[in-house]
Length: 208
Image (cartoon, rainbow, N blue to C red):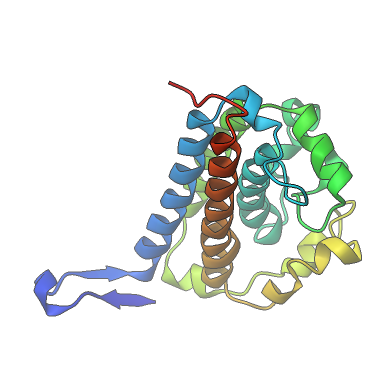
């Protein structure tokens, strides 16, 4: 993977690994900014009928990064498997994809904005250490993604696996660019629209 900037960038070249790193950093920053800006009351609110609660969107985005790097790529325990997070995150919710609405709501009720901010910080550290060992060649490798799910309760349930099955067989960099990049940005757009709708009704007061 190589990205070459136009001539007006003085011929500066950046390899694909650096581009993916910028994408990941942006995902972490967008999540952190929103966790810091929302209120504790907003965390558990549903802005519109038929939509996810605001807190669930941010929790799911943090979880999908953890799942991607640790389970999908390496087949190792996730940060969410640590005792302090197992007690707060419903294990049956997996990483938030393909689960019933009632279970998604239960996740929001069992944790908080500050919990997920702390969790996100731990995920960022672990992902950063993993990424520091990567290069263009390792990011071009295809991980045994489906095999890595086999030991995880619920991860191969049809409704859950269906949400990520199209990633199986792709190279690592493409998977990073999708759930950890484009997917996060789509959810941030969703979150921003819903938060604006909630605040426009005067239901909650934004943080100062």
